[in-house]
Length: 132
Image (tube, rainbow, N blue to C red; front, side, top):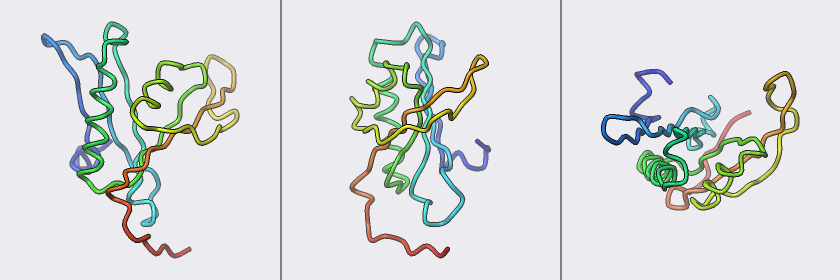
C-alpha cells in the first residue's frame, strides 16, 4: 500500500501494552473503474492474540471502514487448511464462493486457495456502466 492511498485503503492495528497484536488492511482489487467499489482485505494476528476475539474486532472494524468509504464488496483468498481464518471470515459474514487451484507456491508446492467475499448491502446502488 502506498502512503498516498491510506485514506482510501486503511490499515487498522490492534495493540495492547505497546505490543502489536494484529493488523487488517484494504487494498485495490482491480484497476478498472467498474471494480472501484471492491477491495481486497488482509488480516494478520500475532500467535499470542489468536482465539481471543482480536481478529473479529479488527475484521468488523475493517468492514465498517470499507462501508464508510463506499465499498460494496470485500474479497480475499485463504489457504484451505487455515481453518481459523475461514471460521473468522464466516463469523464476520463472509461466504466461500470458490477455489483457485494451484494459485500460490509455498514450501516448494502449489496450493489452492479458497475465495471469500462479503457484500456491503448499504453501498449496493445502481450498477456502474463499465466499458470493455
